[in-house]
Amino acid sequence: MLIVAYVINFSLVSGVTKAGGNACSCPGITLISLFSILTIGNVVWIVYQFIEFGGCSGNLTILIITAIAGFLMYVLVLIKTRDDASMFTSSLVLSYCLYLQWSAMSSNSNATCNPFSPNSTSGLNWTANTVMMMIFGLIFTFSSLFVISATTKKEEEENLTT
Picture 1: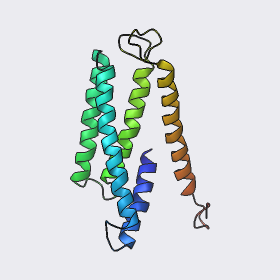
Picture 2 (picture 1 turned 30 degrees about the vertical axis):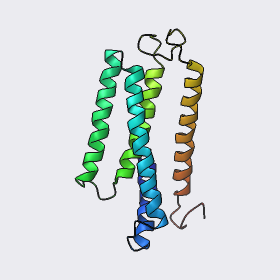
Picture 3 (picture 1 turned 120 degrees about the vertical axis):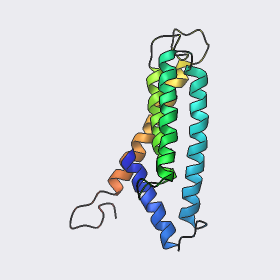
């Protein structure tokens, strides 16, 4: 997913550069919109995970570590540790990390730690949760495969997909 984030970021930033650095160009608006949507979604998603899974000390530890790591991803971009990184790459990678965290915590068979467990008395639908995990997993998988295959080239060719 990290490669995908950098490839998408590179193509959008290149588009902004070709437009004379104008953030109001189509690639600039796309980059800002994706960053905003992903960042707001990440904040909502991690708060939701704290609410649903924060009842166990193990889950709470994982949630706190992920929140700190996510914050550090954004800070490292702001202090320019990499030239090709942006807030967009941090937000996309954090989204994937939150998906993996959600998937792991939803797989716990302990009904106390997992409100989506079939044994849980919370009334939350574990089938809907499993379906949503599969849908998110498919989105991440297909987008990764699409971006990686679209950027694959042989030495003598410009791009295999063109």
